Length: 315
Length: 264
Ligand SMILES: Nc1ncnc2c1ncn2[C@@H]1O[C@H](COP(=O)(O)OP(=O)(O)O)[C@@H](O)[C@H]1O
Ligand SMILES: [Mg+2]
Image 1 (cartoon, chains in turn cyan, orange):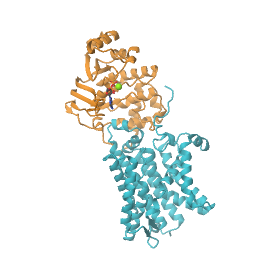
Image 2: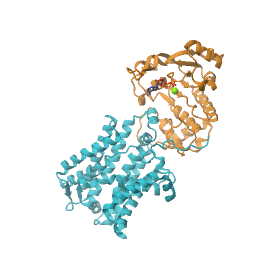
Image 3: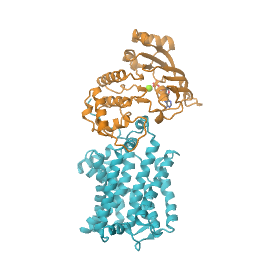
């Protein structure tokens, strides 16, 4: 059981950055950004290459995240400046990233077990040896920092303009906001987080692989939904925290499933079916879980295309 | 203060379905004018407001605001000068965001948005004061998501949002048409209060002739993309609905075909 908890925390925290990124685009911006399937392994690839080239692990992870931000910018520019459909723009970038990754790594896979990683480096600062406990503490601290920064940013004038772009684009444009720029910025931040997630995963696993992005998007969506449904509330702060906890819960369930002997190759199908169920059956959601209006109210992930209208009260 | 010269707008140009939605519109709006704009369905009223706001581009003519040519300017650039409310209560407010967040966005109309806290204590006080004026008690519900408000409340909030940053021009496109009669009356009262209280230069489209006569200091009627009648305050004072309908028929040679108008 202990290994399940450890695994849930380690994996959950690593993938929480990706879940936060996906929450930002899919939910707050209402932009189904498929770039992230490429951004995640890109973050890992760039980090791995930087490490074998002798970079400091912290710098290597930062470079992985920045590469993710660049991928987000590519999709954003394609969509806003060249007017490419949002899904297609993401697919094009993700596809192009595959080549970029192979070129960056020079081969499909880089093992890093012999190199010092970010967890060892930071543990060393505090005279600790790197173990699963110190890894969890380090990840938790980075998560807290990102959670705090994101919460702060989304409540600034600029962050609010991004949220408004997802909620009512026509309105925020009529208030003087260039929504091309808010979309671009949101995509950069989101993919930066996904790149960071990939970089931290690569450091944790001790390798980077071009195939490590397969299925990560559905897992992130499942985490977002789990977080919103179980922990979410009306406030943005609770949603952000909920997404992080959702990622931990989701990874915990996977670890538990493995422990109970479920075949790992079934997980992607099970996840997809679960996500579909939650999205399509709001009534199921309200009875199984206790929250009434988490994702259904948001512009992005709901199965009904537009519940943007909100509810009508009495005059 | 606002000057339109020779504005033309076509839809489906060069096809058999070509529509001339705006046909050589010339209009000069003085500071503080409260214009009511009326006309049959498809006369081009909404198109005119959208052209002024930059939501659509015109095919010919010139739009000036205080001497500055804004004809080709993007909507989000022009937005610093122009507040606008649509008929649809969902259109002018953001449902997922709270009342105070909606106001915070409107408060920065046309300004650069940076990393300042959107809802600060100082701003909250300003929002509360602005909401008190409309008397719906919204100042006590600042954290409530706008999606939970009624259509009337949302339009009233939209009015506060459209005016809180003191735009040079307020454009109202049948902003009470989608509301039930009581809510419509309430929102019209608030409109009058906000517009005259701030001496805002305003164009208000309405399909209600009685309303068009009662409010404002100038009445304009459009037909088939043209301005066919333009009454100033003194001419408007003695106007009645039957007189207006007669005037329309004799000027346009058409029957006023908006049944909503005649029933109103
Ligand atoms: N986006 C559009 N595309 C095509 N035709 C349009 C569009 N908007 C308006 N029109 C046409 O332009 C004319 C004027 O429309 P509109 O300005 O909405 O009239 P009003 O608001 O006076 O009822 C109508 O014939 C309408 O069908
Ligand atoms: Mg209209």
